[in-house]
Length: 530
Image 1 (cartoon, rainbow, N blue to C red):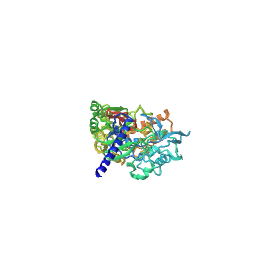
Image 2 (cartoon, one colour; image 1 turned 90 degrees about the vertical axis):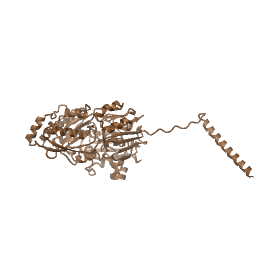
Image 3 (tube, one colour; image 1 turned 135 degrees about the horizontal axis):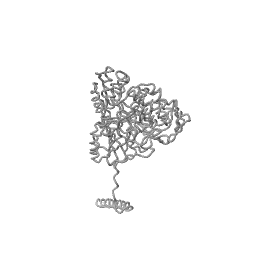
Image 4 (cartoon, rainbow, N blue to C red; image 1 turned 135 degrees about the vertical axis):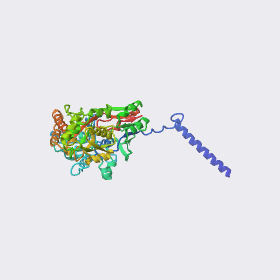
């Protein structure tokens, strides 16, 4: 009985095995004659981009630096954007807009069906929220671009779910261009701001082609592809912004394949990178590298003393020595391709005898000053602020001026500069939108509190001319006002303009479609790698 039961069970098992085997063969024969394993999924495309310093933050309302903008321009979007590698304005979160005949009302039709990275809807309420938090009485002192961007806004209101209207106090020619900037203008998720509170600056939520993943301070910021993006999807799965302070270390990492691309390219590294078959990106830079005097207090509240020290610096020699042909000597406070550029300015020329004589006349023969600078490379100064300050220190010593130098990491430096530390500071600017107002507003006394006017320079005539130019349509009349402003600020010597750097970066030959925008940012949505 046991033998018959065992035999029956064995027969059943063999029958089942044959049946399953037959089913398997039947399925495989429906395609190819031989079964092939399915292809392994493609490995995620992770792009590592090395930059010289941490972002100051990732909330566009509270930052004013390029390191923050490089990350944020991939997370956030504004109502309008730049067209390709230009500063021409194109639709973004707004599909179209109209401007009233008096230039005071801008009405935007919003893109429908867009969602923030947290799944909440983009709509007119989100636009109103993003702007109103930067308008009085909500605006705070630590919103550096708020007045710069929205000073002329009287109110912003929801017309319907997908229509918003801005009413300006007076016509503002730069207004539309300002709305394309990565600072202040992007639209944020109201729900995320409420959720994270003062930690939102470390937890950004936008509508852009990449979503925020993590930020390890001093190490890296990681973003990932937004698969729900309304526009063309990114080709990369992740982008890691790796923080590497030293230029030479970034260059070595690129040559060994540890990173895919880098900015802050030191001129001394160009030759060896090219020899290693790395691709060097070079385009004229929309920037200015300058030395700022603290005009708000002694000793540099005296324009004659500022003029004397300006004569002490051999800018031609300095620029050639530090930048080796990758920067040009600045002849104005802005690049020559910006409309309104004044090509007839006379910046104080190198003349140590005149500088020494002026110091004696002013009773400042034994002048002692403190300079502050930054330790990392900047787009306008790729060799870093310390090397620049030391070169200037050497020039000053030749006319009997003793200068000490305090060096800070970028984020700390910004704080020290805002607090007014130092008699002289080293700074620069990368244009946000290609408009002369964007450069010359750095001399507006209304921007001292925001810290954009780093020299703390005050001149009512300049303030009035800036306000006038903003109301004039683009053209010769407006350009002439900006030329007049440049004449005044160069004569007053609030800055010593030093150089315009080429926009430079380097990347692996395996990288495709990598470009640095004139604003200094890299929009990674079209970047790819083999």
